[in-house]
Length: 365
Ligand code: SF4
Image (cartoon, rainbow, N blue to C red; front, side, top):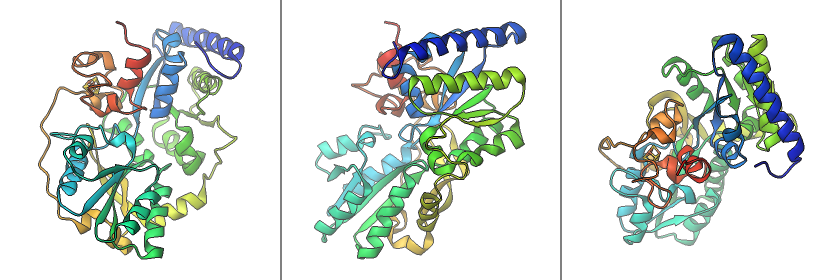
């Protein structure tokens, strides 16, 4: 099951993880449960077979770290509404195209003739705006701290070149507030966090100290190779076995204690904290970043007056998936009405979604 680097080492580590987890269970009667915060970990754990091998020994639950999965339906509806008018071009990342809004997705709006385009970088959207001076170009910006610096660079570029027909509809998310929400409001039942490698490059190890200070909740920052993930899980097991909560940086080659301060600087130069709605979780105070007031001419929410209603409730349980409350098989639509070809919720659309990962690598039929 294991891939690229050193399968022998990974297998030996998996054996040790199982041994330590079983000892913990024998002593406490509890199967240790860890939440992988990051969607890339969700996919990597399923793809490499680690989730399957550890089943029954360690409970690995998915968290809210997939930017597509946590984008509120109303934001998709708003973008479709924006795209309805003539002389507008809506740009976004490819993963966002198939995410269902209340009635349809951006892809279906495009099929109906609206000008919706996939870009690989928000900087491309600035270029499209320059090439189309008679049109408004709106970029739907989603993502966590990993992506926000790039979004900021797009606003910086638009400001420098004075591209007045470019704006951004930002619906970005921050990791610290959502971890706090999971522990206080959602009261997730876990023994520790497998902390995201990519986001931590920007945030730094110190950003997680509050988990210990406020909640005595351990966390280990991990990379994405099998050996890295297994060793992070092993460290989490050691921490809970010794009952000495700690934050461990197991990805030292790229994550520094203070993070990437240049990235943090540009992020907060162009964005400011705001209350943000998370799909299935509701509004979490100060959990997102919106375009800073000084640059409001590039803020699509200020530029366009868009009103969308509350989306209807559906049977999709993506909200429960991202809070670690349910597993994909517990959704009655999984693999039946909802498949990667006909996704009903974002967790099946996204390449980092827990339902997509489960469908690709773990479904029973
Ligand atoms: Fe939503 Fe589909 Fe996942 Fe069910 S299986 S929670 S409908 S994405």
